[in-house]
Image (cartoon, rainbow, N blue to C red; front, side, top):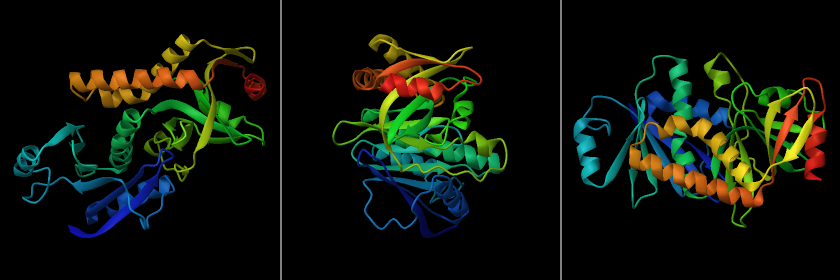
Length: 298
């Protein structure tokens, strides 16, 4: 059922302001929960330059997921990106993105849809020179440090061991953007698995951003040590960390789109490696790894 609009806004450090909205009552609680998890404003009092408009997929003549509506959208220049439970429609000359969502059968479906619904933001991030890392984001004296590593590398453990003069902002996904002055800034994004694997009341201040002063690729060790890596190795590590998360979206795209996004992603990592110092960080079970980070960054 359609009624009034439910929406929240997401302001990013690259100047983009996204509004994620729906007029479908069936999606009201879903939109509201996503906004709460990401600590986002639901007033939307200022104009957005990007709109993600969500609707519930039904077999009705006025729904964009119906066959007739799909043909109509395609005839008007809209392009479909089918992600299974969610479908996105893009237009070359418009900033809006249309998203149709299949009805949820359980809470896990709803949470998974929240994560997938952010794909247009990730897509635009890569197009504008940024990326999303499979990493933790920690902060010290206003300086952002990215701890990158695959599943089980110890990102969450490192975050839990930080002393009081450090802050852990997130432990799974970090969005890195280029601001108007050419500086890389990092936003903490939710650890959606905490909701997928059980009830959680944790939230993340997604709009908060900090300048990135270094990225550390962590590995478990018997000692704590940090070593600067060269530009080529840094590019390879950054690209791998990005693909660890984005591969789930790339695999759905056609071959041409995959090549383009992979190329854009690699080019972005090349530019980041010129400005963001990168290190290998060995982390022991009981050591003071953060002191190695402080030493490395001076």
